[in-house]
Length: 330
Image 1 (spheres, rainbow, N blue to C red):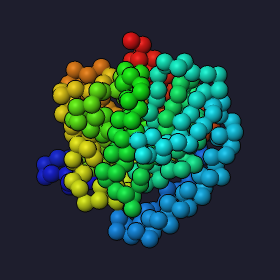
Image 2: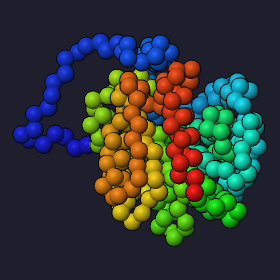
Image 3: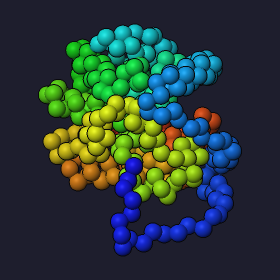
């Protein structure tokens, strides 16, 4: 977290007020904001409470086992769970078919670096394949407390290294949301720094690219974001495992992008707690001369408008699909 405000800097005092869902978004999006506002964000165990974290992860896995079944049943995609580069993955194909030489989306799930393995990774892989119309390989990377940093990005790099043995890197786009957006950026930096050919592009959806959580929106959107409501310092500390949170392989916002990085799509919303992350990394990429797009949705909280049918969620898929096809067109 940030240091206390230095002397001489005058903070803005915000009066207490109720902020209703705006009329500028769809009815489904307004409903998602209303439902999120009624939910409380759970507290987290202390970073050294390993038993507490394992209990929370077990509860999350059990919840997702129940939720994944209807998602998999409704997603127009086929799924095969495989090992790629020694890492468990879920290889997903849209039912309407994908060109054998078409793009491959290497997808990295979110979950605060701690949650989301197994059924969650499988379900979101299928959903992305159906929504984007391309082969999607969802990485079921290792998580803390048993496997803190750098296990997760190393798994992603191992999958990529195995993929490019048979697939042209110019056909591969690496992407993910939240913690997955962090890992997509970090894995790409590791790929670059190890002399491997870069992927065609990266997709960073409301990414947690600064584990110090120094950005303005971590204060201005606290509680206004009905999904996260507040920052994740406990999860970040558990994942970092004692490493410096400002290390570029933990917080890619602090990386040197002038050394090269592929075209990138960045997404966020005006109520997203991570809005500053998206704004700052987009500017950093642009300053380094990188082809970077920034898409910000009206009143959208972290991760979109729930799991419902808000048209704004589909708009994100349309933009990502367009970006993937643009950067792999050659």
